Length: 250
Image 1: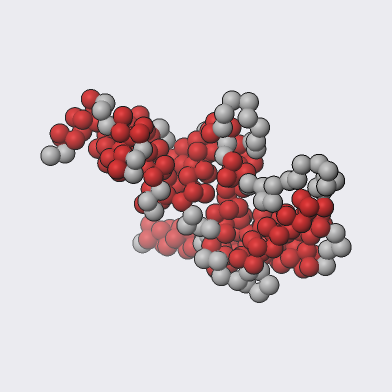
Image 2: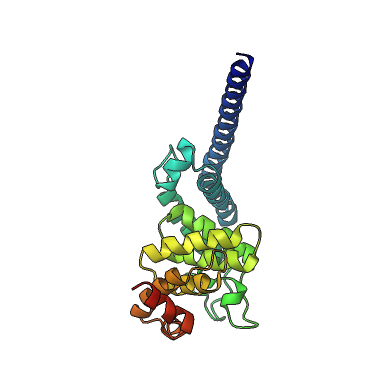
């Protein structure tokens, strides 16, 4: 009987702890939401393009964090599905941020005699991490690419291009769990038909990068990428171990 009582007490304690953790998570999500809403109000009342841009970037960063770290809360789920919460409309925020960036760039533009700036500068996630660029080519750091890709995914959760770029940047950083998360992102992008993700997965499963080595899966990804016209995948299919994997699957 005493053992049963002890078990019940342990279960009740676990329930209380879980409930408290969930309450803390909801409170933190609510605090981030309030800060994002305040930033949007500040952007509407801003007296300069720079101040408006700063406020909108704060709001976008808070939205990205809500989607990334609080996806199990009501707030995180709504924002991940691009549903508005009061004045916080993810789609409208993204458009306002793009406009503010363009306006701020125009304010800082050189005199007319100088070469004009590009109308729309590529974002860090589009440029990619240093390993994806030519040696010596300037561009954002790995940390900047990761942050911008996560922000992009907050607004476009299903965009395979952002998933692919984030996966490459995480692999380059190589922190705890980075390469495993990269494989998950690549799988999602490949499932959406993104050819570069299929070729990348072929390599990772072939050599066990961020995942267990799986020649059968590598063969499937290589064949899919080769069918999309990827030359690297076509060459990898000639490797003896992948040819053997094809024979074993018959």
